[in-house]
Image (tube, rainbow, N blue to C red; front, side, top):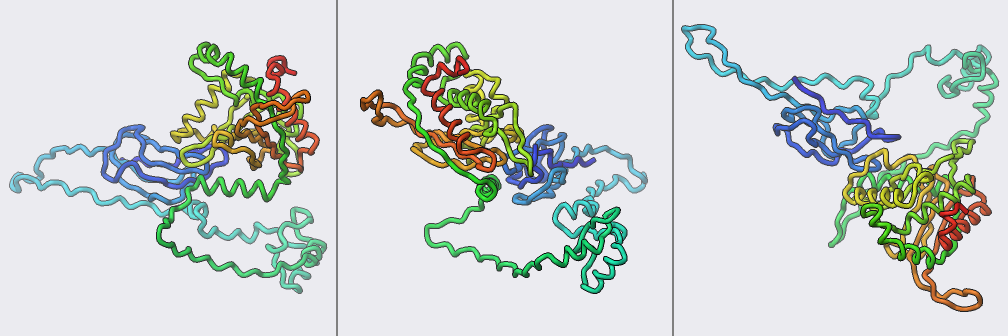
Length: 422
């Protein structure tokens, strides 16, 4: 009996994946729960395990193919046991060996699968479109307008009225545009190599471009004196690591806690736009941008507003390790309400981070660098960091954005405020 290998549920808002590579070949034995194939989604790489033990009998979706959730990837067959059968005719001697079974014919793809794969969908029945009212029907006939073009009307049961037809005819006609000719791939020169863009990299590009096209994005800057935070970390890092079983005290937990406090004071920075509504969040799911094996990913520390320094550092450290190994799960990359990205680990002195839709703001941290600053009328050398807050001006006003960043600066420059909730 054959066992189908299906595309599993891939997580929130993820409906398709690309076959990255098959880990087994047709005819190879497979143990139950053994990885069979890797799927590349918009966010991470997912392994599909064997649903049962057996032999890989068929591969339906080849490497590079795009598949939907629930689609058939291949099938497993059980190990065939040979059973000795007595001779049908004693005079004929030993029976010849049984003929191996031929290939099993697969049923044709059902119409629903064809439509899901982008094929032609069946036309709706004529009764699906309500008949227009008589006056509207006459005007549509005179102007060669089809009911499907007008769509649902404002009359009872969605019937098209004469007014609907007049409104339709008053719309400016869309100028026909010729489909652009496909651009031919550029001829490579000596020393160049063409590599297909990964699904993750394509998705990153599309999402960042979406943020630029849809949000009224601005960036405000400030700088923070890291002296107090660095002194506190230096004084307590060994005791912190010892008490919390090897969890190291970094600066990310300072900034997460500072942002959580500032988000409570300025809730619009933690909100999002949904159509004509603003959705305010009464929790903080903090996205932390980390470099993964295939590019930048933003795992989410859920309910960061309920965590202490050690819990935050442990969660971020775990995300960083698993991101490098490509082991993050789909549900760990969605649901964030605000994000932090630290370009300083790569040496960036200043940048303008791009929003992570549908979030309305993102904080950019940068390299700590000693600079001369004026302190009480004197010039001193201090470890300084530039901070950048990119925000969606449709929902966050400039005053809120600047005040938010100032509040983060104040808490980092005096970490005691984080402990006293000031």
